Amino acid sequence: MTSQTTGSPAAPDDPSRTWTIAEVAEEFGVTHRTVRHYEELGLISPDRRGTTRVYHRRDRTRLALVLRGRRLGFPLDEIRTIIDLYDAPRGRRSQLEYVLSQIDERRTDLEQRRRDLDAALAELETFERRCRDDLDRLGRL
Image (cartoon, rainbow, N blue to C red; front, side):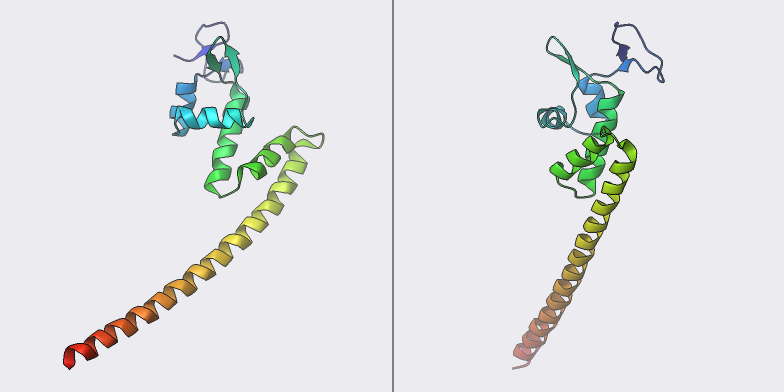
């Protein structure tokens, strides 16, 4: 059951709504361990009530950004920089400018990897063809 900080039920759009680690992990399709790992790294910072973690909207937003960054192949230190820029004086603008520069770098890297993979696949195809041709010749002897 999701609740407000007072422990009473909260409407889905209530800004005081909170989530448990189980709810956050299930929503994002990650393990509790993953959520705790991102907490240990300081990427999210839930409140504590005794030993219970209490996640707010900000934590969920930050976790969503971390997971998106990971899916796109960004290292955690870059993800941290991107997320932290949102809290900087220029806020969203500096974050977006930085993200755009990182996207350009990531795209360039991925395009190079694609070229490298295409070249490796072509080389494998050539090698396979030669091996099959040699095998055919050996079979005819």
